Image (cartoon, rainbow, N blue to C red; front, side, top):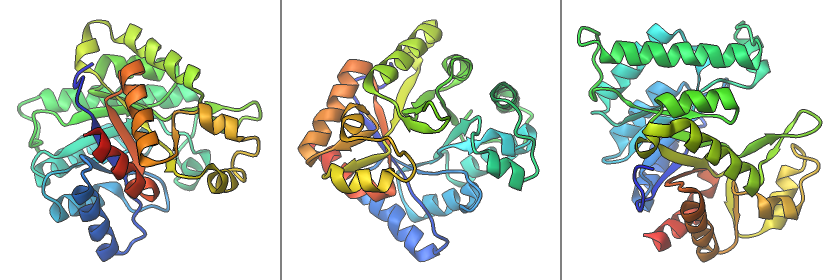
Length: 290
């Protein structure tokens, strides 16, 4: 995988709508050593593109990314214009993250057909093809600052991961699995390893060009409070579930650094992203790794 031996770290910030607090958080993330600052794309959250332009203006070196856009919300042609504009305004610091979308209530609220998982992946396929075609066209305007912004695709299903293996610069694993009741639970270490193996087989000749990312849901020193927060959404979750899930990193900064190093060595993951609520503890582990 590209970047072998070099780790990158990202943080997904949450902007409540307060400009000053958001600017301070982005500057804090850069000072702590993060390489990428991201924003999710959900209704009720600020629109990611203008917020990322603000994040880039407030910082000096970090990349900014959409982690990840719900492709179903966007017309691919108009998305190409948005992404190119943001990449131009940020001086080539955009990493464009895309996903197929999974929150049915948001589709209903936006009056967009939710469709089947296959429908949503097909729309993502069309989106990726349109973006690549337009960015490759020297006549396309506006032009991004980069020849083509780095493309991150996140998901877990076979068809989506095949698409990512063929086209993405970064393939991201959320570490979520379906529960028997239809809900979502943290994937175990064996499940993540199987998905990584699937991607490696699908990428074939592109293997050296692709970077693997893991979205760490939380880093915490104590499992007890974390379990209490998770149980309303994941009633069957246990300490054993947390210990086996690579998206929950528990313990001291040294413990967390060791877990990241193990995932890197065993699975070839070189890019780790977490959320703002874990930023400080995660940064201590990053410092030990560096």
